[in-house]
Image 1 (tube, helix red, strand yellow):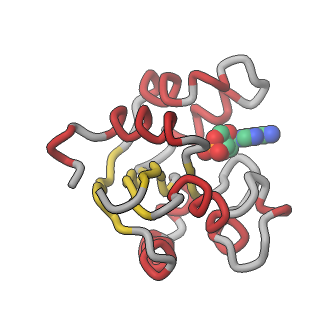
Image 2: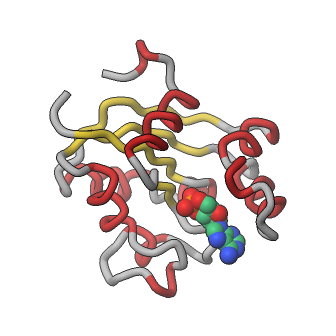
Length: 139
Ligand code: CMP
């Protein structure tokens, strides 16, 4: 392994908006190596499980509905300091607060439909990658 790993999803709004290519280009040109990737769709139970940490939040039901509204692209990314550097690249959760040039500033439409997910710790990155990928799908 060259560096550390983070997990990302291109969310339904960004897939629907035709932004997969531009987001992958941004990932590549910022020196992240894609070590796993696939397009899939989350079931309600899968979305509830993936976002279980937010179960008590007022936006939980909307979040699950949104994340099951269409396909997503899941990927594992490798780079030195991957978790923190990827969170810098995607920008703040709320696109209104996201720095210019970040993926969310460019492609997110709201705090809920915010284009991409990025893990918040190395530990969660490993959990989230294992949720979406078998070991033989990560290179
Ligand atoms: P993400 O960082 O992937 O993980 C939690 C998600 O919940 C977040 O992106 C948003 O899509 C959503 N979210 C977070 N805060 C809010 C909020 N205040 N209102 C609606 N959705 C939110």
